[in-house]
Length: 201
Length: 201
Image 1 (cartoon, each protein chain N blue to C red):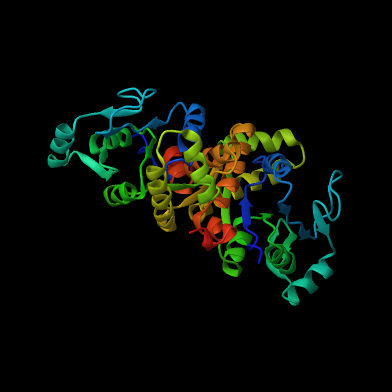
Image 2: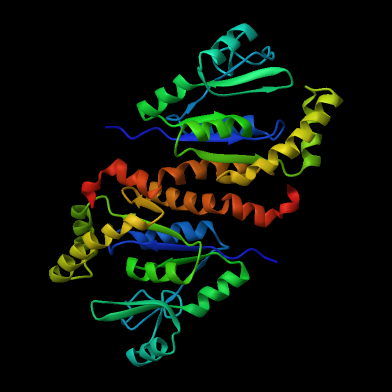
């Protein structure tokens, strides 16, 4: 039997540079799948349905909630985001490692549903640096930026129950750290022993 | 205050390629110190006193044992090997991470003396591959090789309480894994929070 796929749960306040980081690291691991969330938020110009998100209507989302189809879901700034239980189960069963990009609220729900997830929190270098990045990105207005920074401060408090923290000061270094965490977790004793078979001992 | 230095405890049966592996990885981390053991075994032609080992007489070793100067010590094939308590305490206090290259017996003693060590076990690809490597090395006679392979089998059973296992099939990959474990352990939540200060939250 194949080994069970690992879950890497990655949380980061908006503007931490998580997307860039994930893209770099994913390109290094062609065997890792990225979990595509469902959302009711409209796509940005550079986002593609089925790749960045599954874009669905509030009605469809509500139906999935009622059917218990989500492993986790949350509402942020009036939009809903969720991860389908089925896609996680499928990856685990296939022995494919999966990266979930979700906030701490969702991460906690995942932790309740599944054992052995690896929880990684990405910090901005500072809240001031975060505000600066959000400004530079020119996506959100001042009010939303203020909200996001306050939210980041709250979110970062949740890092206290995560396994790892990466401070994204320089993206190369942060990417190296994320990559290392993924490789190291695959070297955990119980996983290696399962993979090579106890017969080795 | 500086953070406390980490202890990386690395065990591997003789002939696993550990020395090559460690050299590669140490060159990547100029800030990590390598713990130099004491031994009563005579130096090989390429070994230097104070760098590879502290070579001392059986009498000197016995004195250190009696003074309780060792964090761990063991006897293998009639030679004694030990790690001085002082050198570990010093590194920890200075906030310097330390790599200890010791067998499982010694590793267990370290685990009893110090908290929070990272225990890494290196496997040969197989026992047959190990026998081959020991033959190729042309250091030991057949009887010693037989002993080392039997000892390796016993040693590998001890891996069951280590944190990580690296199977040294290809040295590049194994070195990458060891490097990753070191980087990942430095990203552990409690260590990062200590380093950046809780004020960040």
